[in-house]
Length: 143
Image 1 (cartoon, one colour):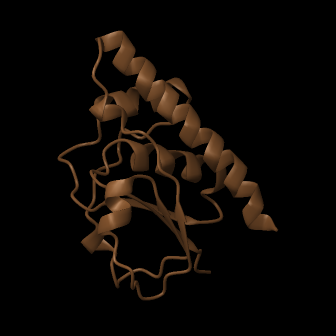
Image 2 (image 1 turned 45 degrees about the vertical axis):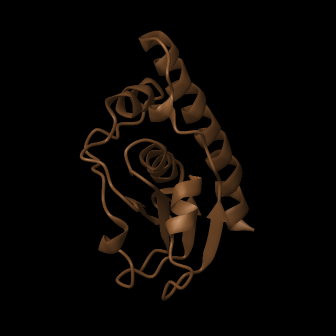
Image 3 (image 1 turned 180 degrees about the vertical axis):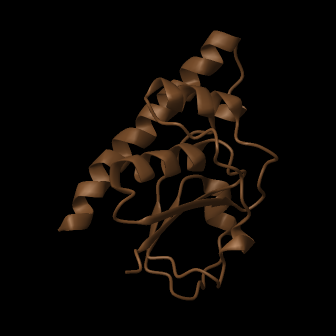
């Protein structure tokens, strides 16, 4: 049986989309093929994203940044979740097989400027926002 695909998109695919992928996979991974990508992918998943997700019991350490082109036209996407404004602007308007497009902008914790403890706190804040949004969305899918 082919599962519906959720693709979570941001610019770098190093923080927000990686955390969101981890939560969708954790909360509903048996119901979906869960992917994430970036319009301009980074070299690695941000270490603080890995750290704060581990604090919440979710291991994203094996995830890697991927480019949007890995999926565009190759994977039918049932739910496209865009988590930043830059990706919203760069995302193709026409996507073969695209189902629902959702725009959930979250602040970029990697762009935060502060002390190390303040930066970790910002990653936690964004992580909690992402978790809350996904926890509210997943039950809606069953309706």
